[in-house]
Image 1 (cartoon, one colour):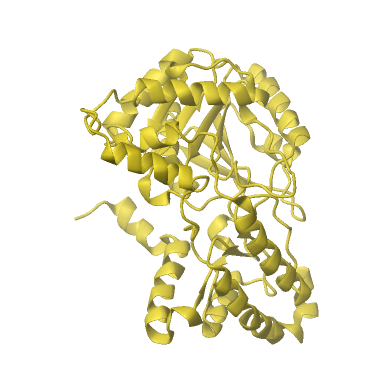
Image 2 (tube, one colour):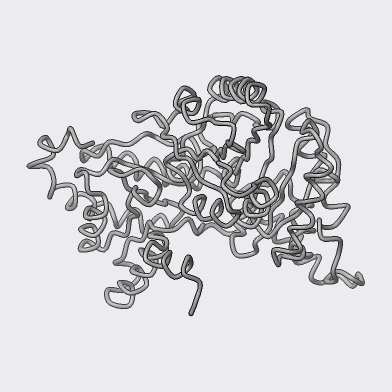
Length: 403
């Protein structure tokens, strides 16, 4: 009766959302203060004051036409501002014609993949990866090819990428800072990847595109600089959202920008604009296009997240968990003390701890914690993590080889 593909996919629906729903059930049973929900990246922080000031001003303005349709690519003046802002960071010449305003990064990624992919063309995805990438590629009729990042550091493994490249490879998705690890890919690795893609493209007689998913690019710690993807890759397509940088996840506002160095970029942009309409988005929200255009240099206070990162990371390490310390985003991705990360996550629930198994991100044997939550939640959760860890202490050594 219904779409077989969709119905069959229901059984594997997002574990993140499943744990989030479990949290709602537990809160009703035990009270919100006694449930420690680290399942979803839903920022607790409020938008910065300049963003709220812009919103108030725009809502109260008597300007006519504020809420009407506009070109499918978005408001011309907003796209021009975004292009100039991006060009200043990458030194790649960009103008309004290289930008499409979209309904968040999820919409942007679906639009880009649909514009690029012919049936069964391949997209390289680096694991661990954001859980929905595989669905987005499937939506566009493509095939995901998963390549693991380096085990101990989650650094880019260029040799592993080279091993899977074929004449059918159309794109590589990058996500740095990464969800779920918080790791930032370093410039040397990215430059090596760029050289590889150029060499293989010449060998195959094809163009291989880099799709950079960048919602966490402004949330970094300890003076780390995120390498600019557009300055490194000739065939760069940047997809960004203001959900995290401005704490606006519910407003669904972001952009796509394609490098001016892409061959036939005007044709690509035409496809992106057309798909913004035909996939049903029509255009990004008019009000929030104007809000973000006035706040491109504004970000949330990253110290808010750094305090939470340090508190949770230091405690987990002190009680025996192994974890790469994240340089950005607001996630930790510790190793599970047992190989079965799903069983570990289910066991954590008895302490009212909601975590997401690493299997959801293509990386079994780990679990994800989203620490964009109330500081009190983290503080109250620490004894629960200690009790959980104590369950595994007596036989952790026997499972070390599973990690």
